[in-house]
Length: 88
Image (cartoon, rainbow, N blue to C red; front, side):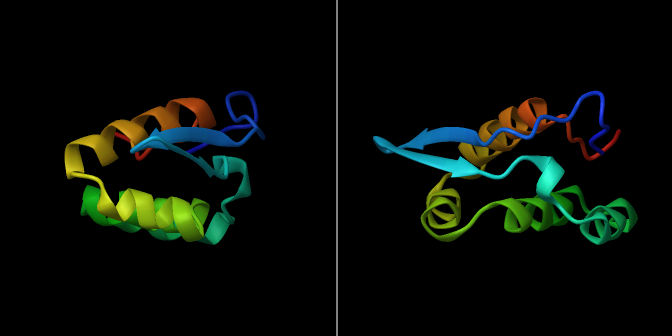
């Protein structure tokens, strides 16, 4: 989860097929979403739940079109940028 010390309020940007997209930082995710994610046993389900909380419109469509390996790279970069994690 994000902590105040690690979290950044700035938007995260990524590029896909020559277009730029933005995701909200983890600081914009409501506590209830993190509570639900914390209870999830399936990491893939948790990952998509977080993405749906921070991506809108064209960014979500771009993520949906990515191969899972590239999606995973973007998600990892977003986590590092936002100071958010799924835990280990």
